[in-house]
Structure formats: structure tokens, C-alpha cells
Length: 471
Image (cartoon, rainbow, N blue to C red; front, side, top):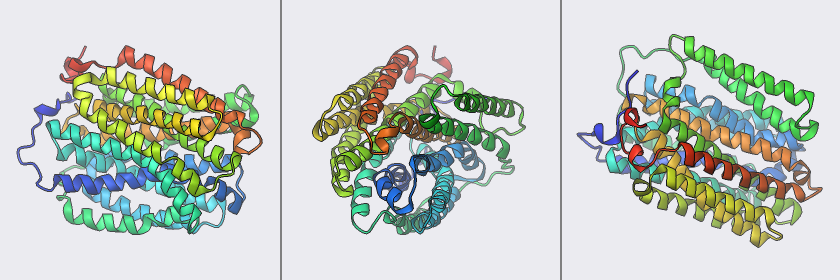
């Protein structure tokens, strides 16, 4: 197995003169994918009314996208390495635009879910290919800056999605949260087709591990279903226990498949490297915290306070700004502070914000709390991506990007499923107590993650040394 290289040990002798334009176009494409994780949360109450959807199917409108996105990301990352990132970016944008059109035209909950799943599947091939191109296009200090910008777009985009969702839902209607992707996706596909350098063609591109992809997607889908239905059947019910056992069996089958396949979906050795493992843990937690804010906040403001979608979206504008500010600052100071200190600080700030939101007795206090949490979460996103991707070799960039992005989407899926069950009564509009419980749970998760980060994250010197030399 090839050893990972440090950022500085793989110099780019001829930097692409259009690299910052490429970063801008790829960043907008990634922004669109992240927007679609949260843009729909603001429209959920309206979608529920128009299509007659209950809590479980509403939760799947969020989780169906992130499950397909996360479940197929490893396949997408592997495909980027085998078949070329450029062609997968362009193809992914075209399919994503078509799936968005399908979702916007949906007249039933199942049709909407089908569009969302297709959106997620296309995003699974687009996102790791785009991130792989960023890692390959930049080197050294420029790569750190580029990853900081990338993380700021991703973290801020999640918050901006709620604002955009409010504007569109209150204006032309919830269908436009999907229709807006169509022209944007087509224009990006055309621009990137013209701008990106052609893919290098390998002599033996290999094959994709479709069985491995099916197993990991089925395992995560079963886990999410168990978490969603636990809100109705109970966390200790026999049905929940059976689903948990099925999840464990499917994940075990995936590990066996990876170990014995001739061309496995992923290299478990890569995931077990300390920087990659820490980065994936951080991105999982950060995304779960992020989706908690938008999922609970949307229902609290609209169902309990009676705010319209536009006013709710505007209340989340400070959250977007705080997320981008946290990510931008983190990108500038990460090299000096190191992943351990900065990651822990981000999680502590996020936990404090969640605690404030849990104790809030009004919209202003809740908005302030989630704003603080967003700043911490934005910093954690930068630490996660830079730690996991900063020391991978170029030929591993697609797979490593797929791993990080997989845990990002799984975090969103699991976060939505857990808070949906914890706050089941609040989502139905019968009580506000579940919202407080949901934020309190998020605060506890952030605190535990901070302790784990202190124990296992690499320090400043380890982060800057070759992965193989790290203790």
C-alpha cells in the first residue's frame, strides 16, 4: 500500500493558471449540493401540507437525499480515480439538474422522494470528483487555502440553504427550491467542460465494487430507518433492536467484502490512518450538529411561533454568516494551532451554542445560540477536511475525498433521524419540549466529541509530518 505524502512532498511543477477560476466553479457546484441538504428543511411544513406527508416520510425527504449521497460516495470517489474526475463532474451536474426537475414536479410524497434519491445519487459522483480536482489542482499552502475556502462554502452553504429555501417557499412556492438547480446545473456543466483539463486515460481503469456499495448503503439505510421509527415504537422496542442487529450484520458483511474483493470499494487501511480517521469523525459530528439546527429551528419557528418561511429563513442569515466566519478564521489559523486544539475549541463553542438554544425561551435567544454553535461548527468543518485530506497522495485523492464526503452525508442523515425521533411531538406541532431536548442532546454530543478529539487528534507537529511518521 502506498504511503501518504505530505502536502509539500508532492509539488505541482506547473500550476494551472486557471486554478482559482476552477475552484470558484467547483465551489459553486459543491455549494449547490450542500444547499440541497438544508434548503428543503425550510419548505418541509409547506410540503407536508400540500402533499399530506407524515413525520416519517418528511424525515425521509431529508434523509433520502443524504443517504443516497453518502451511501454511494465511496463508489463515486473510486470512480473519480478510475474513470476521470472531469467527466464525472460534468455528468453528475447534468443528472442532478434532471433529478431536481423531477423533484420540483412531484405531486406525491413518493415521487418527491424518488427525485431526492436521484439527486443524492448524482451528487455522490459529483462531490468527491470535485473535491479530488481541488486536491490535485493546488499544492502546499495554496491547498490549505483552497480547502479553507471549500469548507467555508460548504458550511456557509448549509445555512444559506435555509435562507434561500425561505425566499423561494414564501415566493413562487416550495417546488422552486428544486427548479432553481436546473439552470444553475446546466451552466456549471458547460463552464466546467470548457475549463477543466482533460482526464488522463489509464490503461486498465479497473471495475467498481457495486456489491460493496450496495452493502454499505443498505446498512446505513437500515440504521436511519431504525432511528426514525424509534420515535414511534420506542428506543428499546424489539423492532428497534432487530433493525440494529440487521445494521450490524450488514456493516460486517461490508467489511468482509472489502477485505476479500479483488478491487474493493475502499482501502480500510486508508480509513485507519490517524489523520483520516480523526477527520471523518469530526465531519460526521459537525454535520449532525448542523442539520439539528436547521431541522429543529425550521419547525420551531414555523409550527410553534407561526412565522412564515421567509421570516424563518431570514432568522437563519446570522447562522450562515457565523458558519462562514468560523470556517474562514479556522483556515487561517489551523497551521499555527493544529487540529487537536482548533478542533476541540470548535466543538466546545458548538456545544455551548447548542446549550444556549436548549435553554432559550424565545426566538432571539434561540437564534443567538444556534449562531454561536454555527461558528464552532464552521471551524470543525475546516479542521476535518484539512486533517483528512492534507496528507494523501494524489492517486488517493478521489478515494479519500469520497470517505470524507461519505461521513458528511451520513452525519446529516443520522442527525435528521435522531432529532426527528427525539422531537417527534414537536415536529407534529403538539409540544415545544422536544425542540429543547433535541438541542440538549446535540450539546452532549459536541461535548463528548470534544473529549475524543483531545485524546486522539494529531497535534500541530504531527499534523505537519508524514502520516507514516506520526506517533
